[in-house]
Length: 80
Image (cartoon, rainbow, N blue to C red; front, side, top):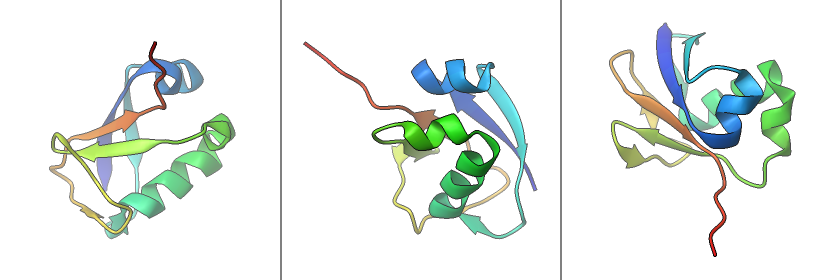
């Protein structure tokens, strides 16, 4: 299944694009997507955290991903 991932902050810098077309198996959850991304982009594994939003809501690791989902990678943020 082909997804379009939207990237922000350091994830955009690591991957080098704001949008990424990414191929996954037909059955995958958020945890599997994170693992797959970290295998393909090892620098993502060095982040303190990486949240994923599915259709505008933060998703837990066991959330299944569907082809029509909007997937956003949300890197750790700092404030002051």
